[in-house]
Amino acid sequence: MTPAPSPEVLQAPLVVEFPFTRSLGPVQSAFLTGLRERTVLGVRTTDGRVLMPPVEYDPVTADELSDLAEVAPTGTVTTWAWNPAPRRGQPLDTPFAWVLVRLDGADTALLHALDAPGPEAVRTGMRVRIRWAGERVGAITDIACFEPYDGAEGGEAVPHSGEFTDPVTGIVAPARLDYTYAPGRAQSRYLKALADHTTRGERCPSCRKVYVPPRGACPTCGVATDEQVEVGPRGTVTTFCIVNIKARNLDIEVPYVYAHIALDGAGLALHGRVGGIPYDQVRMGLRVEPVWSENSRYPDHYRPTGEPDADYDTYKELL
Image 1 (spheres, helix red, strand yellow):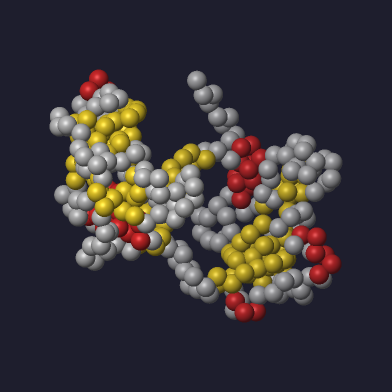
Image 2 (tube, rainbow, N blue to C red):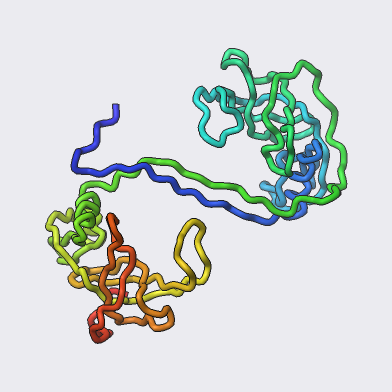
């Protein structure tokens, strides 16, 4: 049983999600376009093996591969695992089996889902076939899943040119990670202090360096950090970059500046956005202070204080 978290430690659900866009070479382009046309293509190696799904280089010899071969939409389960609780984005929304299927004519197996009423209906060696998606776009999801099949094993793979009308040349694959984040005691105290517009670090009892945000231990000395130290709120820009690409779902106009800011009293710099000044006037040594938006747990951005720039020698160790 997992022990219950300490009440002083925060927890929150966190989702990391982004679209991954990639272009396709001739082999992957032919494979995905073929799925759209209900044609399953593998690639033949120099020693005659047919790899399915196809790859651009032989994993054994590293030879470049380009000889495409059509395999059957039927095959044999080589191994499997039952999935009793499908998750968001998986091929089926009812319990199913993850299976490795060696399609007839191929020498390697393809991972996909098998629609079966229960684990008792699945076995290694069972015959299956592809169930095609009703609407196909040139993606692995054009194979909706596999389903049981009573037919005999198909024949050998046959050569295929890989040429199709309107080939797929690129894909966008969404990546998503859902998890519960527990920052630990040190960062929980740091986050709770931010809710009161206060920034607190922790001092190493050995090297006396103040870490912001605190980690609970000094990464240099390897000892626990318990002494809390209030830092800032003002600080100094140590280094910065100008952002020219607008992030999705972020309501900030480009260009803007993202900087490392050494808060007064801190032993290292944290990062934050610099506003209230034209982006091309931000500079190393600029003195800044936090700007808090309403009901925010953290500064929205940092703005110039109007003080003279800090001398380089006062922050050179924090670059």
